[in-house]
Length: 252
Ligand code: CAA
Image (tube, rainbow, N blue to C red; front, side):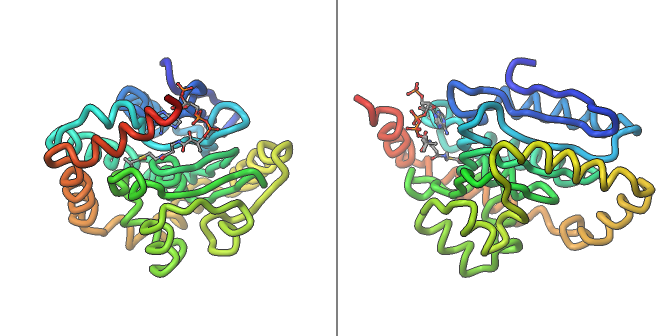
């Protein structure tokens, strides 16, 4: 695998998104690798918890890959969004808990990845945003469906309509993350939490997660499909593509 590092540390699966040159942005190939690692995790009964983070000190994940998105037409955009959304739902549906360690930028698809995890620990330098609207698109990996459940509808709409970035303290205040640590302590805190969870009988933790997530698991697919549809409509007649190009050409 080129874009994901995956290793087992005892009963903890450690998954690192690893495209540092583009701040771990998610292209289709990375989503495919993530999907296959999730399959491996599903088939590894000795695991009790997963830690998910981004490579390097600057970013968790800076979103979906804008260069790849810029080339999409409406049909391709629907396919990209539906595929990513499906992978994130697979992550969310793992029976064991997933802890996000947000070690920097968690923007767009990166923030949506965070929202698909059970517990979110952030470093004090974490930055969260759903900047899609500033790029002429909308969330495509479940953000419109999940954000309000975590932070309430008003906060969700404020963040999605403005695209504004917030720091770790504000994220903690609105419960977009669950705890904040100094950058050098984040990893240790995540591993300690994973091990603490792993001390409990696994079936009990799994049943607890299933019970808490009953609503999520019975959610109609409709919301996610609608999001992919509205995401792809942004690409009609090349509307979004022009805005995405502005980001990529900003340094010229
Ligand atoms: N896609 C592709 N490339 C990206 C990227 C992304 N999402 N984010 C960063 N990069 C690339 C940059 O283009 C740059 O590449 P070059 O060195 O070749 O120019 C490299 O990563 C480093 O980034 P910057 O030079 O921009 O670093 P910075 O410190 O000045 O800024 C940043 C960091 C604020 C995260 C800025 O890179 C940024 O705003 N990135 C885009 C974030 C974003 O808008 N994400 C949402 C994407 S849309 C989405 O996710 C849709 C969806 O839900 C499906």
